[in-house]
Image 1 (cartoon, rainbow, N blue to C red):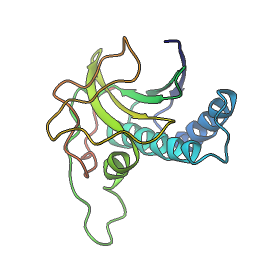
Image 2 (tube, rainbow, N blue to C red):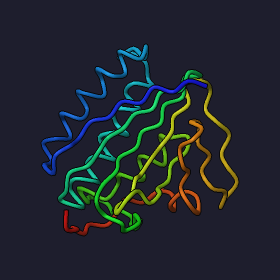
Image 3 (cartoon, one colour):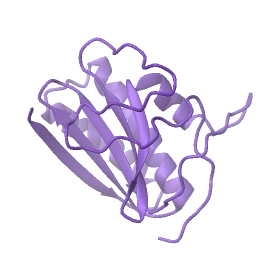
Image 4 (cartoon, rainbow, N blue to C red):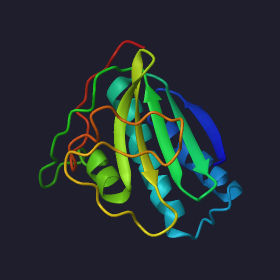
Length: 169
């Protein structure tokens, strides 16, 4: 299996989220995923949520990676300087934030997190083909890209975003 990986360094400014979306759209088009494909919009939304969580909740730079498998699957990873695992929380009614990982859980075929260096990486995968069958409860995430570590202990509890908390960069 061949894999193409591209990455972008993202500054610790929420305005960088827009730059990450534009960059992702251009890389998706370059990989053969048309901007009118539902997959492209899904991936851009997932990237927006993961990059937002990284820069807003850590206040540090992050690295966005997209890995394109020859079979059509796409893995998105956002690495940040915080070693704190995502702590799910549930948004209520009119809350203006707190739904990021709920969106990731609903849109990605698989997602989770793993330690990376002194920080962590939150990842998600989207299959280009038909959606995968749901994994059994408690099963660890399954990577579509060989040689890339899978979240230890499986996905974070579904349906809830990361809690805020800044870390030293």
